[in-house]
Length: 347
Ligand SMILES: Nc1ncnc2c1ncn2[C@@H]1O[C@H](COP(=O)(O)OP(=O)(O)OP(=O)(O)O)[C@@H](O)[C@H]1O
Ligand SMILES: [Mg+2]
Image (cartoon, protein in one colour):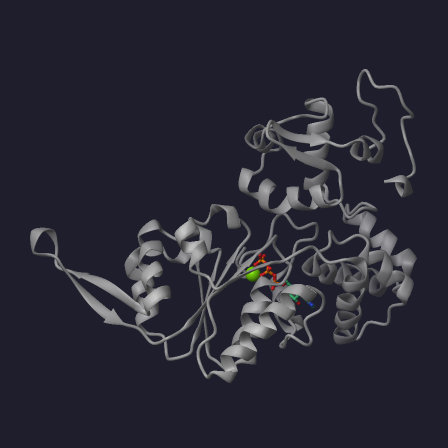
C-alpha cells in the first residue's frame, strides 16, 4: 500500500497530519529498527559486504503484510549506504516508457524503491529483467517494420522492491533479486519497544501496563501500534486523565478493536466463515464477495494475521475456522457438542 493512500482497512483511519507523523516515526538506521532480527542481520551483511567492495548492493525484495516496515527498510538501505533514494510504485509504472524514464535518469549507486512491485505493467517487468541483470535496457525507436531497438547503458543501481503479495511476482523477476526478506508480524515485546519509542517522540507519559495492553491489540503491526497509541493519547487528553490501562481499554473499545486486536473487517470475515459457511471451507473469492471487500485485501491484509493467531487455516478447498475461532466468538459448531464460551485465555 503506498504511503500516500489512507489505509481504509485500518482499524483507525489516519489523517494527513498523522501520515506525516508516521513518516517522522520511521527509524533511520538498522540499529534503530526494532525486531525482524533475522532480516536485519541478513541486510546488515549484504550492505556491509557491498560497502567493503565499494559496489552497489544486490537487489532486495521486501515481502510481507502492510505496516511491517517495508518502506522504512528501503529508506534505511539508502541511508545506511549514504545513497540517494528514488521512490516509485508499481501502479505508477503502467508502460515500459515510464520505467525507462526512471531508469535512464538514475545516478550511480542510487537506490530505486518500487513499492507494490507486483502491480507493475508486464511490458515494464520485462524491461526490468535486463536492467537488473546487466544495467542495460533496450529502447524501441520507430514503429512497425522500421522499428529498431537501441541499447542504453544504465548507472549501476540497487532495486528495492516491496510487495504484500510475493506469490504474484513472476519467477524471472523474483529470481533476479539477490535477497528476499520475508517480514514477519512482530511479537509483543518488540511492539512494546516500538510503542515506547513512539510515546517518547509524542511526549506522552504512558505506563508499562498500558503499553503492554496496546501491544497485545495491534495485530502484530507497528503501524497499527503507532495509530492506536495516538488514539489513546487523544482519549487521555479529552478526558483529562492519564494514559493508563483503563484509558487504553476505553479508547480501543470505542474504535472497535477487540482484545485480540481484531478490527471490524477481521470480525466480518470471521463471522462470515463461521455463521454463513458453517466454519468453512470457503473459497477466497466467495468470502470476498460476502463481506464486500477486494479478494486482494482479504488475502494480503486480513488472512495472514488470522492464520498467524490460529483462527483460520488455509486448505486446498478454502479457508476453515479453527476450534479457537468458534470459542473466541462464543459460538458452537452445529452438530458439535461443547461449551458455548471459553475465556479468551484459553485460545
Ligand atoms: N521495526 C520497526 N521499528 C519501529 N517502527 C516501525 C518498524 N517498522 C515499521 N515501523 C513504523 O510503522 C510505520 C509503517 O511502516 P512502513 O511504512 O515501513 O510499512 P510498510 O511495510 O511499507 O507498509 P505498506 O505495505 O502499507 O506500504 C512507520 O511509520 C514506522 O514508524
Ligand atoms: Mg510501504
